[in-house]
Length: 88
Image (cartoon, rainbow, N blue to C red; front, side, top):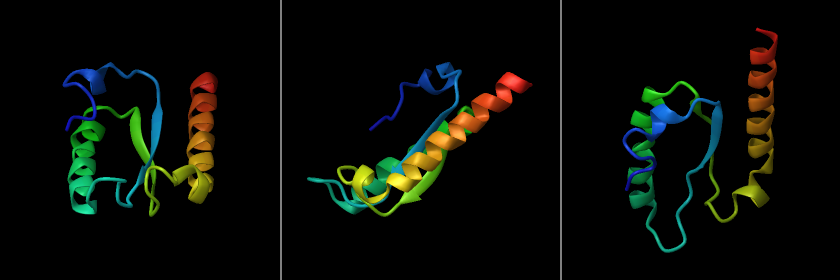
């Protein structure tokens, strides 16, 4: 499974932050999901604008309910990056 097309990671020119849910998927095994998540490493290496802000234990369907603080922190992180870019 590809997270982005081969050139997609290089095309993202604005900062992006992800909160990575490490729990199982509804209908998928945790081991399979971990393999899919491992595909993110090459994407992160190709584009400094893309970063994982946090890894959380919830699954994708419950991330906003259980790990809303991590999502809010990712938004704050992006805001700080944007403010730094404006000042610089």
